[in-house]
Length: 477
Ligand SMILES: Cc1cc2nc3c(=O)[nH]c(=O)nc-3n(C[C@H](O)[C@H](O)[C@H](O)COP(=O)(O)OP(=O)(O)OC[C@H]3O[C@@H](n4cnc5c(N)ncnc54)[C@H](O)[C@@H]3O)c2cc1C
Ligand code: SF4
Image (cartoon, rainbow, N blue to C red; front, side, top):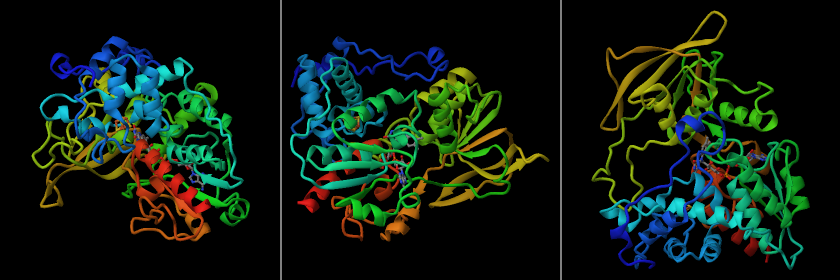
């Protein structure tokens, strides 16, 4: 423990983002790009080095990051040792340090009666320093087993799987149907939350360490599972939960109603390809935008629409506004289900003068004009009584809009690959495989990440990628 009285001396203070005024003018990261070492040492000093560190236990960090150890090392100005400890459990701390919702902080023991340690900030600062100082180098593989593994899907689960198997000496090829590597790290989470140069930097390290990446190949369509089974000793499916939940109400086919992922992907693709010179994005410029559904995806739609110059933005939530503090039914060390203001909410608030979120709203239908363009939508207020959704009489409302973004979560993976590979699905439509085992119903085919567990988090994808790699290694022995 760095400083015995640290948690009494220092208040929690997170690193500030760039000001809203500046950051909404570009797609650069919301982070300032610099870390104040003295500030981070004070924050690291707040860690109590608890006998049972809940932050790194099952309710806390899903990759079991050795949090108290690196907090202490940061306090003692031993950044390179802190980086070594961080990489022991987390392949990609530069991703989680930027985008993780930080369940670790929700279960930090200090959080029982004080604000939690700023774990996520410290994680990001350690790995950013590691890159700045050139401490992070490609892994040198000294021995090859002669075994070949194909990983299908290049999101965080696929990348973690590939890195771990490569370190063990297996030859790994990653197949990706998109034109760029990274899964939702590339096309999903927007640049302002995770710069694409940060993703490419890590992918380049993996390439240099011997992993092969093959883009624009859709497995199950462009190449069959059977062919991959002939060419490789094992397959790992990490294809994500890409089937989005839709809203099948009247006039859903109106022009201007889009799935959030279509909107976010087109914006990032156009930005990366031509800096938006090709005008191929779906633009919110001068439009009244309605985002249906919250979560990270909803926030990212809001942040993107703000940058595109939307005229107004409203975000519908079916549920009520969460409480400011934990409810009794949601005690420490569980993830706190509380009201949060994410970057996109803060930006919309500053630009339009009010938080964009509207609660207890259900969309009944869209309205389109004679040319088929969306011009509005009809809602009703709803409540929940004994688990039942009740529509409130007389609360119907018509909203003007020219762009609607559907951000209501993801159901399961698409099923053409599972059909092609003839693997079983679970009740929710995910690829069937037990957590910790990762074996599908077909020998030699494994699966991990969102396509197995359902829509989740980057840190869980890394956890599963590490886990499946160890099971594949056992299988290949
Ligand atoms: C908009 C958005 C914002 C998010 N923000 C956050 C956040 O802030 N923090 C957080 O922790 N999580 C966030 N998430 C969730 C997180 O991104 C996912 O949980 C995580 O990326 C899942 O990783 P994965 O590797 O399992 O799948 P994915 O990242 O979905 O990657 C799957 C890859 O497989 C490819 N693929 C699919 N089928 C095939 C095939 N047949 N052949 C070849 N390739 C194929 C896909 O093209 C894709 O690239 C967000 C999700 C979205 C949609
Ligand atoms: S990966 Fe997420 S949960 Fe784990 S230490 Fe980092 S911010 Fe916390």
